[in-house]
Length: 371
Image (cartoon, rainbow, N blue to C red; front, side, top):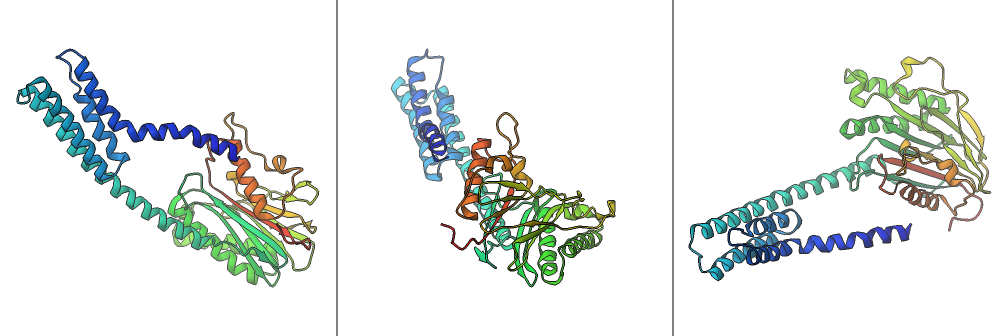
């Protein structure tokens, strides 16, 4: 992956160099065009374009300097031709000066918008980290790692969620995906996570935790007079790893099935015996939740993820298959697994993911710490 990143960076360097010199290049082209073309032609469009190009790309000082140079070039040409006070000369100079002033104004608007966007991104990042704190790396004989990767650079708020909590019944986990984006999705995430943290401590069975999450979404929908106010529904998988036991239990509510990566490279898909509807759609199906139970041997890793992983496509439209891509591979620990998985998704998509993804990996201690 490093080679691919280096190649992409090398390919973009000439573009960045061209952008840096483009305003100066436009002024030079304007001079050459005016000097080499018939008298009826003028290089004013080049001189006017130079500060406009500089406005969104450079600082205020550089934009002002570009405008001054463009005006100086126009004035210098007409001095060279000996007609600086002709109507055409004054018109050209006034045009370039006006466009330069407009470019300064554009620069200020762009800079202020950038500052507001940076502030909004900072607030979004704080909100996201408050909702999704980094879990402890070591908990109850388990090694844990989590990642939230936004599809858009510098975007932090989304509808994907994860939670890790040590309880009297073992370590309990949740990974989910709220339908929708924006503040509505964040509100739904806060409802689900708040209900999970409370229910995980109080409910002796994982099925009870799922019922509490369902009721929490129903209450919020009633309070807001519409389930759409909390984005309608949430797919979620709950997992429980009892203290001192080599087993894990899961309840899956319409979510992508977790994977169990065994020490020898085998990958098992933890599919529920019966499919269940997402949280928030309980009224449409009356069957009760039933937890599935699987062996969780020492050195094995449980991988929970949202559909941003499985819906990542390559340029030909093929979906990413984590089960096939991880089969036969072993990793020192969960952090290394998530790092390799993220890099593999970037290689697969090439242009980047189109949806956010939350990743949670839990490795059962085999007696030696991950490297």
